[in-house]
Length: 131
Figure: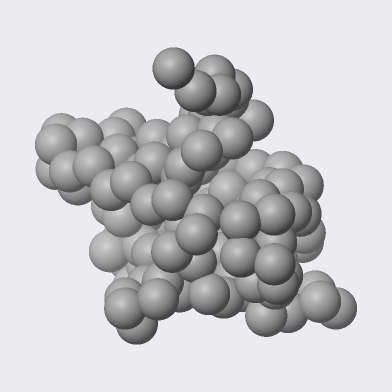
């Protein structure tokens, strides 16, 4: 039929995000951040393949978003947790954005996504080359 879809990365957010936010939760002010980190750790899953980026999340993991590389126009990454994990924002052709939070191996994933976007569109999607 076509090219077989191979998985480059599949998993949840970096465990360090959960640990840091649980520690911050002991200071009552940061409890909302802690709750957010727990929800991400329980139900957020990323799957990056040769054909698409899939994000499953929301309450009880009921929401799923799939995007194909030819729809991506820009990707921006930001290091978090002393560079052990990072956040990424993927901007699509229609102007909508998909946020990928607390990604482990985010530099590798960023390079992989840029490589796939360049192969599909002829131009790289990188928005933050020095980070």
